[in-house]
Length: 526
Image (cartoon, rainbow, N blue to C red; front, side, top):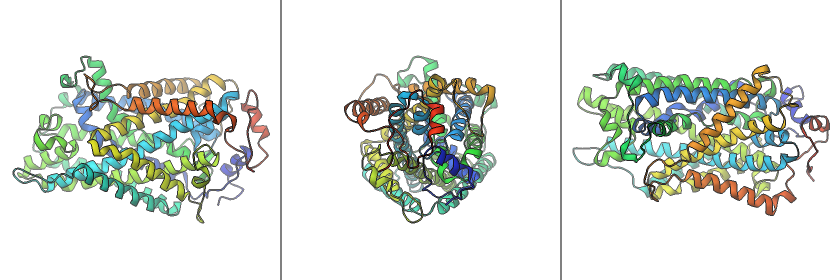
């Protein structure tokens, strides 16, 4: 437990919340957890083929740069709010404190969007592991005609087993998870260097730099006629890799001096992701042997992960056998494992914070802490939710595209709404914490808000025309459904009993009057 000298603990008391979670994390450990969750190697491994198909190298390379810049601005704007309100489950708490008399409704809506996006993120990361593992099995057993590729039912078993292992590890004390994050950060950084070095050394030929940096590939098979639309859809690989940095906010109550250090972990993690991911994409695109085999694989290879095919092709072109590429897949497979495991850490803290304020069903269960201060029940609750979201795997690989689109669209919306609320309701009286953007605050916040809203809307659009039940982008249905369900429950019931985050100390009047136009109903713990 942090001492009373910890500035984060004092700020928490000012906001009316008593410290219950322990504070074992240094801000660098929080940053490492965020780096593992964002894990550019995981995001690129999952969706590189889509970027190659929708727009080609120019979209993969320069789309990454554009998306990185947009998310750096978003990270700066969110870090400023994080410093002012260093509370677990941060985004919905920020919305409450900034939305004036509409605080309870804003908090309710943002909380549910964020929670749903977190579940989709865990499911998407878990399915990336399944996808990579299935590719390894197939290529490792491939003879002249056949290889073993796990069926949909087997993939569900693998998916459930991986989530269970992640939940067991997350039930350990946070210092154990922090150590796992340290190992995961090294694995991501060193692994990227090793993969890049091996590809550059082994590849018998390299693509021309002019092709890598400027070549555009239309996708007539998708039915999309607009090249601009094609390019925008192609940025999903980059956008999904940059999702997850709200984990910094969810771990604020477990980070030492969280208010004072809030400006570092989120922005640093986004910067590291930008550099590592750019290097990975650049070398992959440069060393790819046969573009057609990756963009449009034939036969059984069509179901194999695109990165595995690139590794396989590089080694086969050099040595006549691609088995070395199968071994190299251990690195992105490990990155995906760390990503899924630590995504669950962040998601469980989101559920814990939301349940502490009695906004989630069975809140009394999810807010329970064990003797080490770990919300174990919330860990297993989010694990079960992620497993349910992954069950469409039984219907085919469209489940992965759905999870990535839902997490990207949903979390972008959850990130953007508090920033927008701050600009609309609290622009003239918002008082930042120790980390402040100064005179650039409004400009950065407005740009970040517009970027996040654009990203959220974009990834609810169809990926293929004409639209059928097999290729429909269910992200739009999922996000709109959670919005309508949240609104419906609010109108029918929640507006009469949910007054926003709940007080468990009675010393926050000075803070509340700074932010609320009129004091909304707010209930204390009984």
